[in-house]
Amino acid sequence: MIHRALKTMRLFHSLTQAELAGKLEMSKSYLSEIESGKKTIGFELLEKYSAIFDIPVSSLVFFSENLDRKESVPERFRYVVADKILSVMEWVALKDDAKPA
Image (cartoon, rainbow, N blue to C red; front, side, top):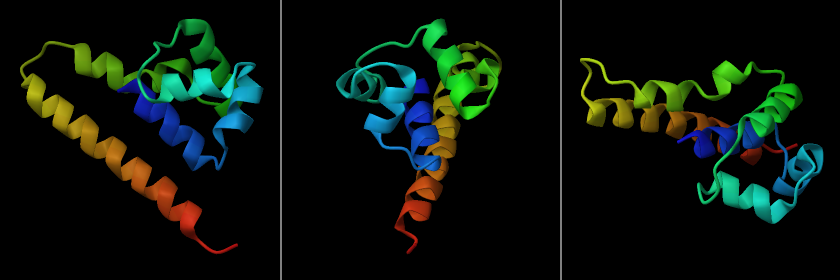
């Protein structure tokens, strides 16, 4: 689910894929594949995201780290909660985009 978090972060900061791809020094199509979950993201790229958005790498991978943990909370529940949190973040980003300038 990290791909959804990264996409939401881009939308929250009102960046197009082309703009962020330029900052990340990659093609727009590659960024699109990352955001759709078709490509995996490595630590070096997470560090670039961290620098661009001024967010610790640990925060960027928070969801994926917690989803992979095996604790007393059922796996299905963790996925549902993480999905809901990401959905709210996406809604806020899209709502902000819809505001008149």
